[in-house]
Image (cartoon, each protein chain N blue to C red):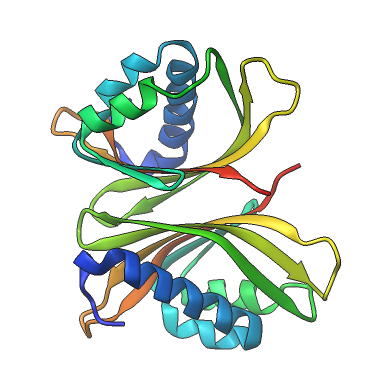
Length: 127
Length: 127
């Protein structure tokens, strides 16, 4: 993914597809998308830095997971970032009743012309 | 609200309470919270600038609305901003079946030491 803020919608959709595909097939590989300054709010818990975030994401208590994206919206932010707001359904361990989720990513450009996740806020919904 | 990024959680909660209170009682007064560079994604539609955003928000087709916030999460962003991710329920015209919603705000500081909404993404959920 090349860094081109003008293409924020395309970049957001490509990122979203990539992120959930990796999440659902091999979560450990998500580590390339986070950096030391990255932050994750996962439900009520907060994590800072790639290492802490990856420890959280790779120890979630399910065998299989599938993200089904319903909406993926995006806007450019000051400083050359891209804000992605996603809603969708989460199928955990092949369960018949998907959980609804919402997630916000703030992508920032890397010096190498790619993108990393600076902010990540995730909430299961909505009782 | 004074500009102090270190207090991002408090600022976020105060902003959230203020925003929805104004929205539910006198939407026209939200205009002080947007600027010319502000962006709104409201469901599938996009609006740029305070004027276009306010036209949208003040012509929504309901008589009364009440936002019930379930969660309000926040993180600081590069450039001194604050990201707020809210989930909750929307009671429209006193209806018995609240609609679920998710909303992401990206607040940026003003030169006057206050905050404005640079990014605003809103989605009703979740069928």
